[in-house]
Length: 150
Image (cartoon, rainbow, N blue to C red; front, side, top):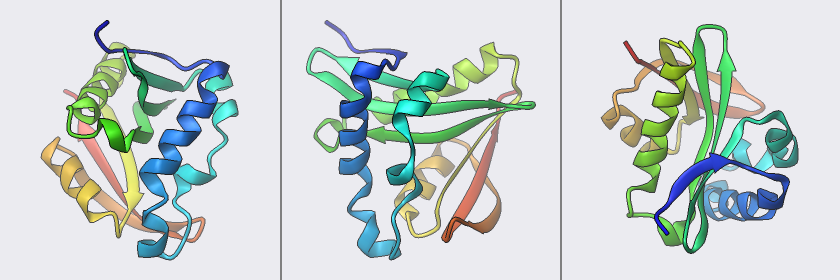
């Protein structure tokens, strides 16, 4: 069975929470705070229809939270299981998110990350995102980025 993207269901919440925990916990020591994705309410995100998963024959390998906004799609969170990293799933989910935004008639996709997650900032820049500003929210120093889809 090849991998595919699909809307998350309530049955997926334990796997989503495990993947997010595995993907973000190691950042706590670096940034001195709990990363935002570890604080999110995934049952609510699933109920809102904004959480999606990448599933392979080995189960759920990644999660992405996309929130439509006025004229823009917010890529609120993306995480790949550490055991599945290096397989291109992150890139595939990023491209999928852009296509969802385009199909929704949106001209931009935006995201934010913690400023000390420098490897994530570099990845997003390679995918064409540009920094728009920095701000502190919920005690986290965030870098905001945006990509035009036109």
